[in-house]
Amino acid sequence: MSNYPSFRLVALLLLWTTAPRESFVAAASPPNSSASVTSQPLLDPDIVSMLDQVDANRISADIQTLVSFGTRNTCSDNSGASPGIGAARDWIQNRYLSIPGLQVTLAPWTFRGCGDGTTRTLHNVIAWIPGSGHPNRLIVIGGHYDSRTTNGLDGVSPAPGANDSGSQTALVLEAARVMAGHVFDATVVFADWSGEEQALQGSSAFVRQYRNYFPNGTLELNLNSDMVGGDNTVNNATTLQQFRLYSPGTPREGGSTPSGSTDDTSPSRGVMRQIGYWGGAYVPSMTILPQLREDVPGRTSDHTSFISASVPGVRFVEVNDKLSHRHSPDDLYNYVTPAFTARVTQVAVASAASLARAPIPPLNMVASGISSNTVQLTWSPPASGSPVDHYVISARTSAENFYRVRMVVSGDLTSATADVSQDLGIPPATAYYISIAAVDAAGHESLYAYPEYRCDSTNTCSQPDDALNVTAKATPTPTPTPTPTVQVTVQTNPAGRSFTVDGSLYTAVQAFSWAPGSSHTITTTSAQTGGTGVQYLWTKWSDNGAISHNVAPTTNKTYTANFKTQYYLTMSAGTGGTVSPSSGWRNSGTAVSIRATPASGYIFTNWTGSGTGSYTGSANPSSITMGGPITETAAFTH
View 1 (tube, rainbow, N blue to C red):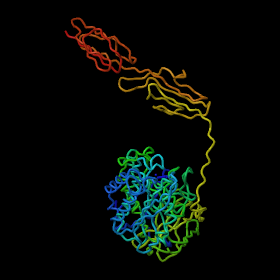
View 2 (cartoon, one colour):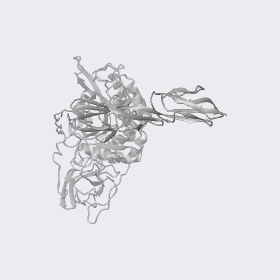
View 3 (tube, helix red, strand yellow):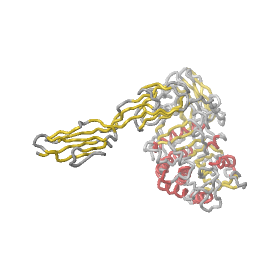
View 4 (cartoon, helix red, strand yellow):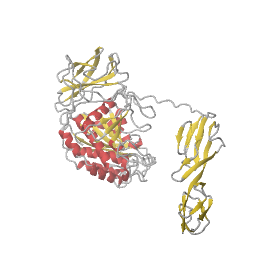
C-alpha cells in the first residue's frame, strides 16, 4: 500500500446509530403497481463451489514464498535472481501458468526513479479467463506484489512484505485458481502490479496500456486488495470477521479531505453496494465496514489508477493495521492471519464471479416523481452481458448506504412505476436515491444503473450535481492557523493514583494542550486504596495548591500529585498475652518496635510474621520495617 458458501454479509452503516437499519426484506407490492414481487438473493451453486475451494493453507504457503524473496522493492534486482522483485515476478507468472484455463502475460513498463540514473523495465503479471459471451468486458481483480522498507527506493535491505503486499498477491492468485475452469460472460482479469509503492506506477501503466493485451476491451471495474493479511497483533476475533471497503463519492474524497456522506453517489459506491449485498449473500462470516472515501487518509492504492480513468474501483483492507509493521523489515509472516485473507478472497470471488456472469447495467435511466408517493423509471435494455430475465428497482434513503428492497419488474419492460413507501420501503417525505439493475434467469444481477437519481422529500427527482464528473477530486480542507497552546502534563507520584482534570477521571499520566492562561481544575482524593493492606495519602501538589484547586498556566507546566505510601500492620496475640502497638496504618519504610506481654502464668515463646520486613523469631521486643502489609502473631505457653 503507497489499508463460505451460502452467506449473509452484515452491512454496518457509518451512521448506524442515526440512520434506519438497512434491510433486504421483501415488501408487498400494492395494487396497480408495475412490480410483481420483490427479489431475494438467488445463489449460483457453481459460485458456491468456487468459494468452497478457497484454501487458507495455500494462501499461507504463498505468503511465505513471497516473503522468502527477501525484498520485492521496485528498485531491487530485476534479473530473476533472489533476493529481488524479478524472482517474485517469475514465481507469480509460473504459478499462473500452472493453472489450466488461464492466459498469462508479462506487461512491461519503465521506471527511472531509483536514483541511479538508469531506466529499469518492470512488469505487471497479468492472467485472465477469456469471457465466453462478451470477452471485451473486463473485470479486474488486482493487488500489488512489490514491497518496501522505510526507504521506498532501497532495493537491498530486507522488505519481507508479508501483509503489504504478500497477502493481496496470495488473494489474487487464489482467486485465479478457484475461478479458472469456470465459464463467465465477461473476461475476468487477475493483475499483480509492480511499482505501487512508487506512486502507483504499475497499475497506472496497465490502465494506459491494457488494450495492448485486450485490443477491444473495456474496463468495467477493479476490485483492489491492499493489506488483507489480518495483522494478529492489532486485530481480534471480531475484527478478523470484518473488512474495510473504501469507495469514493463525487467528488472523490482523498488525501486529507474529510470522509464523504451517504447523501452522494458514484460508480465506485455502486460496486460497494454490490459487494455489500452479493458478497454478503455468499459470505455471511464477514462484515463489510463501508469507508466513504477513496482510501485511508494520506494513502493511495491501485484502485485510484482506475478511478482516475473513470473506471469504478474499491479497496479491500483489514480493519486495523500496525504502523510499525507497515513499510518496514517487521512486516513478517508470523503477524498475518491466512484464514482472514481466505475469507476476504471469498468475498472478492463471489462479487467478481456474480458480475462476470451478469448483464451490464440498464442504460439511460431516468426517474421522475409523478405524485407525492409515486415514482416512474424509464430505461433502455443493457447493451451486452447475459440475457435479461427481469429487472429490480431499489431505493435507499439519503442517510443509508444500501438499498432497502428489490422490486421485480418484467424483463420486457422499459418503464415502470413504484409506490415509494409500499414498493420501495421509503418512509413518507424522505429524500432517497433510486436506480435499477438487470438480472438474468440464473439470478446474476448487474450493477445498478448509474447515476442513481435523487428524489427529495417532495418526491422531485433529478440527477445529482456532479454525478457525471466521476474523476473530480474533493477540495482539501484548508489547514487552520494553529492556536497558541501550552503543553500541560498532570501525573501522580507514585504513578497510577487517580486524579481529575476538569471533572474527567484519570489513572495514568495525561498530556493536555491548553490556551495560555485558561483556567482548569485539578483534583485528587485521599486516602486511595492500593489493594489489600496498601493505601496512599495525598501530601501535596507540586505547585503547593490545595487538594482541589484551579490552575491557569501560561507556559508549559507539569503538575504532580504526591502521595505517601502506607501499609497496614496487623498485630495478633495468641492465648495468654497481649501485643503492642495496636494494629493500624504505618508509613512505608517505618521501623516499628513490637512487644509481647505474657499474662500471669504464661511465657512468651515466639513471633510469627508475614510480609516484607516482618519478623519471625523469639526476640522480644523486636523490630520490623514496613516494606509492605505485615501480620505479626505472638505465641505464648502456660
